[in-house]
Image 1 (cartoon, rainbow, N blue to C red):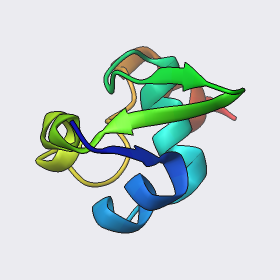
Image 2: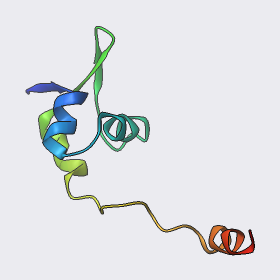
Image 3: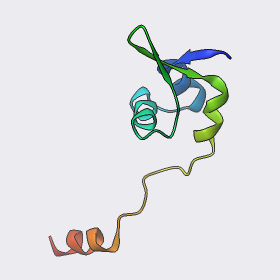
Length: 69
């Protein structure tokens, strides 16, 4: 088990550190806290590697609200 930092994970996934932190918060990417720093098993990067790019589509309700403003 090779543990890497969120910064290293971001570089390997071609993402920002903030986006990796979002994955941790959403529990889409498991990690363990060691000495106040999140460490990620590099095998777990495969869990988010094949994600869809971009933002998810807004709900129809949110789209209508945008059109009205």
